[in-house]
Image (cartoon, rainbow, N blue to C red; front, side, top):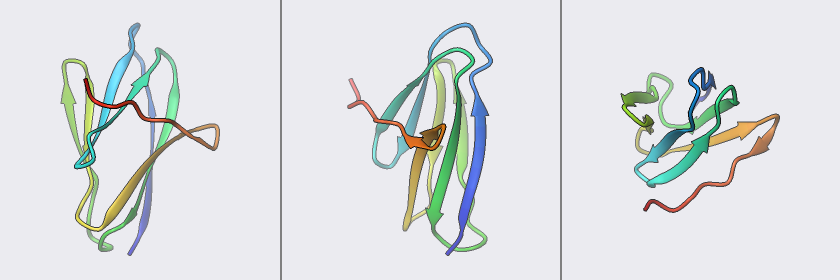
Length: 82
């Protein structure tokens, strides 16, 4: 089991959508907003898969993992998919 982190900054001039699978949690990331993505669990060799889409990112965690998004140490609230 391993904890891995990734820092991401929305460098665009529009809101981006980050979807975390397989839970279908979605987050709106504002322009210039910086978040930290943390993956906990999975095997040491497992990695977080990231897919770029026209509207943002899709994050895929390996089986047995959890993924959280934080900003300034506070966990972000997710929105239900529409």
